[in-house]
Image 1 (cartoon, chains in turn purple, yellow):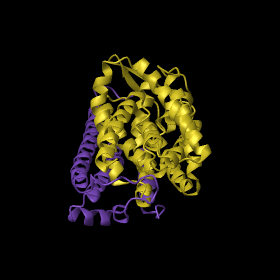
Image 2 (cartoon, one colour; image 1 turned 30 degrees about the vertical axis):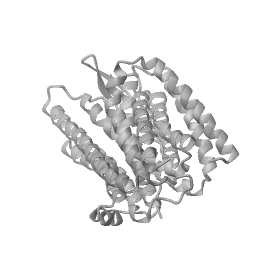
Image 3 (cartoon, rainbow over the protein chains, first blue to last red; image 1 turned 90 degrees about the vertical axis):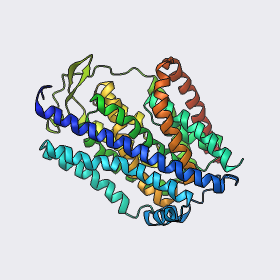
Image 4 (cartoon, chains in turn green, brown; image 1 turned 180 degrees about the vertical axis):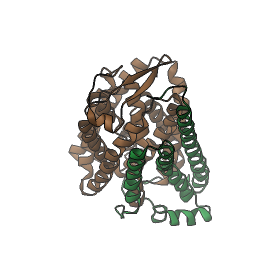
Length: 132
Length: 278
């Protein structure tokens, strides 16, 4: 049990505070981007009728990062919103990456390995091609 | 109905979902999916994509607040995330082979279960008598502050908890929800972790679990920008601003109301699933 007055306790708290801050910034950045994209999207398409009763899937170009970035470059509202979504998805994943660092600073090898496994599973999920 | 009106109504709905999600600890998804499918007649696949995004927004937003208090057990969370993320990928694979009416029925059942879970008696104090070797080796035991004093707790049922977490992951990946109710059941019911710790740790895990399957669903086109935008903004505003509003309210009555509404929506979804109206 770590004492409240030991140095390591406070160092760990610092890391946790940092991770907390990183989460908040990730969420704020994501919502600002989605908001800007949303305005552009609504100005252009606000008068149309939504069609979500039949599943056709989101437009092909907003399903992967290269397509999203190309869309952002031509100020496409949908692509900008989707960039916000990507930032949001990246937030918990970055958190895992920072946790590896935090456990390494504590010299906790077991949890560096466990966290690497979690990151590995998510990385597999991204590049597995399971999304088709 | 124009896209503008659709967006504004959805924004208000997502705000409510974010508020209720943070109050009950179940995340925004359990409210969002029935709202989108039953009320807006949106295809359940779009609803699943939107719900995953909402779960991540809700989790990250709330986690930022909770870490400061130092009650999240990051080790328990990380260890069990191996189970939930692998489960989530399995769920996302299963989703391809599962008919949408079956998904709707399954979702209704999980919804009823979640509603029941919010009303049950909580494991307030945890216990300190476990002699689990595995918990010792994996460094899962910890302590949390109660009125400024650190109270230690010991974890039991590690294997059972891990197994149940895998199921929670599969459900999360298949139905697009955080499955916070199953996570709390595993940590609270099986592993005997104090309620305060299990709720915040579950919340910590929801974002990571949802991200594991969301990256697959993004590539499948389940996440549509037109739905994602009002959902993200609404849920976040609900989770951030709503928690203040809720402090002044009678949460017990609100919980009860929430359960009634959720149960009604769940039955509607099960009915729609059986009659093929989704």
